[in-house]
Length: 250
Image (cartoon, one colour):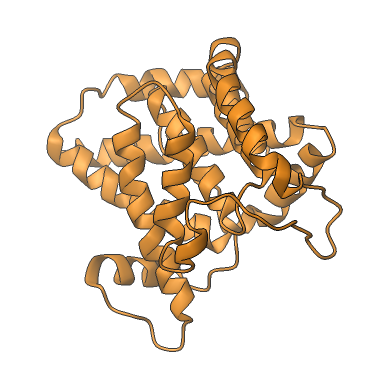
């Protein structure tokens, strides 16, 4: 996929802004559309077996999918609840440690109530992957430092780069026993929404590129990941504009 630039993203954002403010009905339809898309894609990146159609059935009809793990259903429902909180948090311009913990708690409490919204107390070792994460004794301090740095990052970086860096910082701290990637993608989208950008989806077909760029960041090179996110924002903007045009047809 050809990488997009910040300039191209800004051009599309101007097109999107021409449609604003959106009617209440359009906002509701867009919100539900992205609930399914973001929940499916974010879970699928981590190995969840539910298809996008199955995710829609679970969330909208409350029906379980035969032969699929119970955990996969819990992940879909939990992510959907965290998605709702994403919009509540986006009404403010600040991001707090409590926001991050709440994203994780909502996503994870059906899976592991004792570790939901709680920093891990054990080391993390990913088999076959050359990445290093901080020991549990340093997590609380690192998270507090990270949250204090957020306003400075927001001031100095373009909003899309800023959102990507928030994702990277959280994943590289890896503060939770599980669910770090999904929490990081929610955090990234919170930053984007607060700045007026659209929900951004990383499709599962790009899982290898996504993981490779995360590993590069863990080794100190953030550029591949930032370039990927800029492109994903651009692609999500195109999808958003397509939907807006459909909703405005008469």
